[in-house]
Length: 112
Image (tube, rainbow, N blue to C red; front, side, top):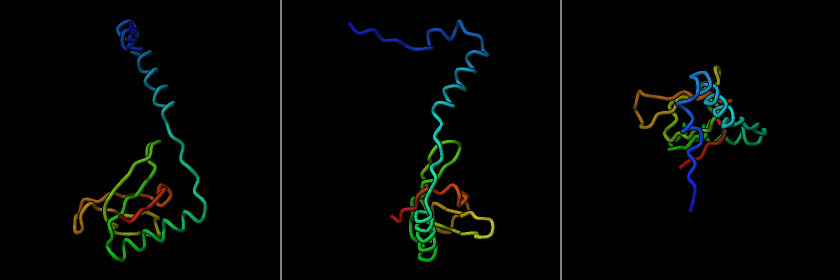
């Protein structure tokens, strides 16, 4: 016979709201991921892939770091701003709904 424990679910009704909030924050901090440090070669490779994708309108997948987690975005490079160090990416060519990603947050670029 297997015992199925529901963790803190069964005790939540006996806890104060402050305790529940503290447990939630502790769980979030535990699950945070640290941003990896990229070497110079990987940064240059990412830049080269971005330039190629922008020049030839190629479909890319970008792995970036945001809010203590890794996110993936697939689309086209609409604009590369070297002065402010960010890119604008869109899901479809000619689309006005873009996502802005900072150069420092880009971890990997793959041309699909």
